[in-house]
Figure (cartoon, rainbow, N blue to C red):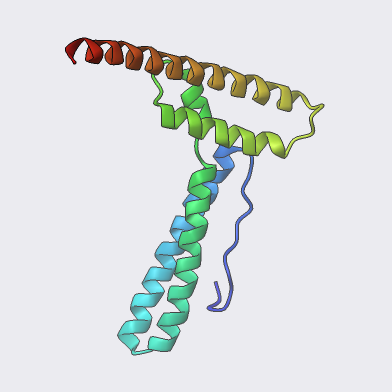
Length: 144
């Protein structure tokens, strides 16, 4: 990678591709870090600064790839045991993916069904929270 070259990634719909991209970016970051260390040992601070800028860009791209690599299928397989944050994250990931698909495609229908399933589970969890809160409010009123 040239010093002035900028690393960019295309976020893919397939989380496996995003994980592969993440592995590639990690290797690139390690390579840049070694080059920065070598430049500093050689006394080339300007070259090291340019490499640091490239490294920072690669790190930003790695964060994007990490978000894209979220495997919502694991959440769907364990929907009863998944945390609320994981369910929300799965919904957001699937919503990003469904926006890139034509509405008439079979994949769109499958993702839509998965989103509905997640939202149904999220509503169930929210209802349980409301019930327990109401019970606590009633108990609190008895104490007062």
